[in-house]
Image 1 (cartoon, rainbow, N blue to C red):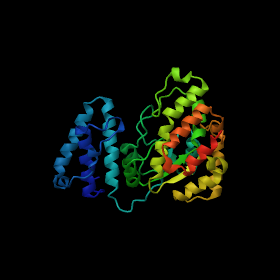
Image 2 (cartoon, rainbow, N blue to C red; image 1 turned 30 degrees about the vertical axis):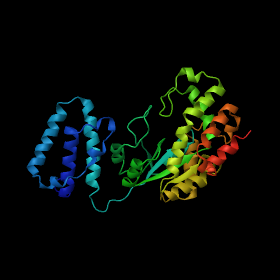
Image 3 (spheres, rainbow, N blue to C red; image 1 turned 180 degrees about the horizontal axis):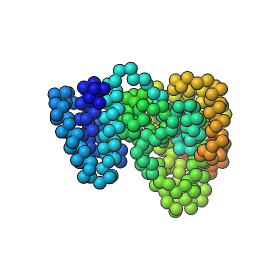
Length: 330
């Protein structure tokens, strides 16, 4: 490594690996505090090679004497440091990174599977865990997959931090949305039987056993505010492609090709069709896939949706808000 990497990159790699593993407190479970992401300290350049070797010896000794779970911290540090070191290498070819930021029950698994069927594009997870945790991007996993072509799907809202990660890691965000009333109808059926924890609502058997009307109203009041937050946060983000579930459902080839053009995948409509044909042969979580299901919601649920949207009069003419309102009119 001494003879391959530029000195700055080598120093950076060793310094951050040792520093993170020996002294860091934020690398467990893949989460990283931004203060631990100072990838290059100018003072490092004054260290001697002997000092660096001494640092490496400390890492080896520490690794040998710590429980296995602590290797997660070392592994995370290595991903971060390696990514930072390679960033200094000349002529680095950019990779294709696609993030499907999606509403729950909006056909995201179908879309991600279709994109993954395009040659060379793998599916990856950019968060450290699922369960009830908000699906915020993890720098360790972003660094881990930074030199792969990938597609990833997450229920993630936009924030300034997410925006920085998108820019830093060259990610092309695809925002997948759906008529809110249709989402609610699909969510009702899904959450009746799904026992996994959700970051969007705390739910027990007591709520699952409510009548349809009460359960729909419960979801409209507790989960749909997250949907609105998600949509409006991304609506005001820069350089993101918004895709409507209805368009994906009606014209999947055209929609997939639109995404491919946005992400610079360099594929044509015929290749998109082939990818979709492969997806049709696989089991995805596209449970019903019917447009307009929300019109069958109870009057109480439709009223709850209308009242939620009324809090945002400035978006009265927004396409998604307008479509949702029209679909739940008596």
